[in-house]
Image (tube, rainbow, N blue to C red; front, side):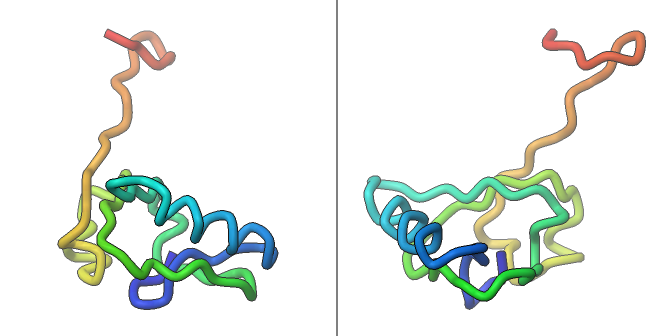
Amino acid sequence: MVAGRGLCCPSLEQSVVKHAMLHAAGEAYVLADRSKLDQAPFSYWAPLDRDYRLITDEPRVDVVFPQFAQSVILVSEPETVGGAAHDG
C-alpha cells in the first residue's frame, strides 16, 4: 500500500478485483499490517480513489507514515496469557 498510488497487487486480475471491491460498498476499509505500508513489491495497482479507512497495527503511524495518519484505525496486538493469545 502506497499513499497516493493505491494497493500494490501481484496480478492485473487482483488489481481489478480489489478496485471493484473498493467501490462496491458504502464505506471502504483497507486492512494492512505495518510491513505492508509504503511498500511496492509488485507491478500492478488498485488505485485508492475514494475515501477509505486504514486498519493497521502500527502504533506510531502518524510519525512513521504521516501520509496515512488521517485515515487510520489502530488495532493493538492481543494480550498474551501464558504465552498464548487470550480472547478475554
